[in-house]
Length: 113
Length: 114
Image 1 (cartoon, rainbow over the protein chains, first blue to last red):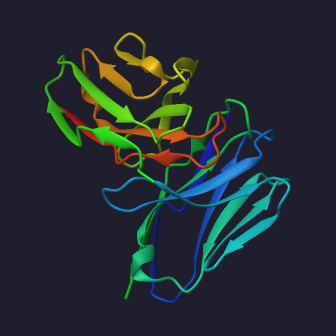
Image 2 (image 1 turned 90 degrees about the vertical axis):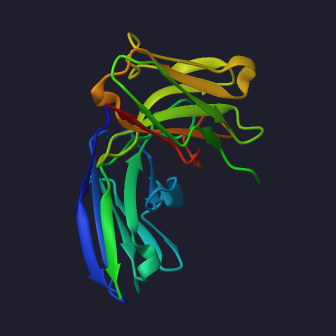
Image 3 (image 1 turned 180 degrees about the horizontal axis):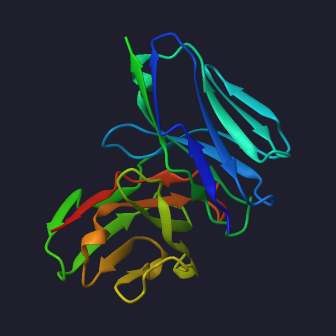
């Protein structure tokens, strides 16, 4: 089955710096890769996702890149702000049908003013 | 749009006791998921319903966990008897279709088993 590894487990940056979180997956059939943000005590929320037919996707200060050959994908946050502080989870799955979303262990991002 | 509703928000029980969690998905969402999130880990799927039928329960510890979704709307997840290792946040999520795109999560129930 699918296995998703996520690094680093914790990340501390200064406000305005960039943050990068990396994930690798094992199942080459996976073709959908979402990222969820979970603030302390709150529900996970989808912030960006990418399908395997796309190499990069941007949404304002966040971007996701995908390397299908190497089976890894990354979340990039530019110009970080204190409100970006949260736990970020990557996940991988097939698309459509009744595929299972497999999550990474999470990265705790702290943005210091 | 109302979100996924879960209750209770917190629950503390002793081992070997029983506990039940409730979830009401977003109106019109056919697919409902229960995830277990142990502290420091990502959510792990326990069971997936499509309407009122079970699609995937391969990771549900069926000797102690059960779930139902009568009438294809709200759902309950039960643990009987609870073990210490069941301490976790139990998240309910829903999506419009059977795919995993655009999952909407509830706030979860934090279970502590003492």
